[in-house]
Length: 304
Image (cartoon, rainbow, N blue to C red; front, top):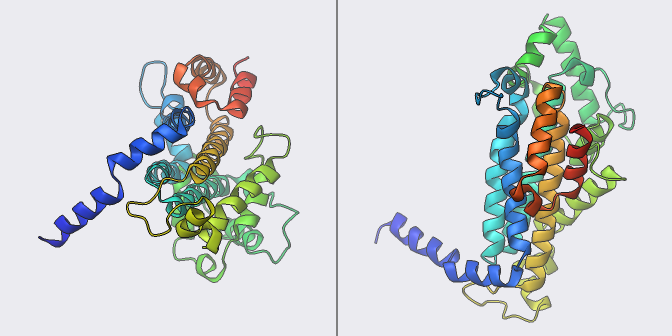
């Protein structure tokens, strides 16, 4: 048996249909809600970038492509997180879900950095020596000294990576997720997420990080002990409590991602098209099933 054949067999055992079926039975109605929330995250930009004639609005696409590049990876990562959750691999599922949220945050950050109005208003809540504030200041200086056209950068946001590529500041400084969250809050990227968006986002990130940091009670073996299962059972035992926990976090992460996406999109979509898209999405049965309450409030605000 070749290596790839051995791995294929191992993968079929790890992600067996029996595991998925058992998780689906335990999750009940929570699973289709999570699935539809994921699909809404993946498909919303495609819908909103479509013109009345059915063509893609490439002008808007170019303006948003710094974020959309991250969005593509984020959607795939979310699917992998959900698949692992349903297969009994909770630590992996939580880790991938945190990767999803970091991809969305970074996409939003670089999308904003491509716009002059954001670069020139770094968060006053960040210390002057904070790595992110220093990067924003350095980036603004570089763009100004090299005579880079702000309007061209804003109309093709992915060009921000050409400016930053190889820059020593990208490697000498580590941007903390806490700083990125604070900056995005101050830029309004989390607007309409809830009454206290910064606490919602930080609490979610902290919750996901507990599994990523491999605290013993959040390893799969530790979870099995807590839920009265055999710790070295194969295939992995399906844990009702852990499954419920990851699905709840997954649903919230999708909503955070969609709200971020919409807050970035609104600056580029013509008002009449925006209103029509919001109306259509609100009336969609798939969107209703996704149970995205904060997103629905935001869409209603823009559909007027």
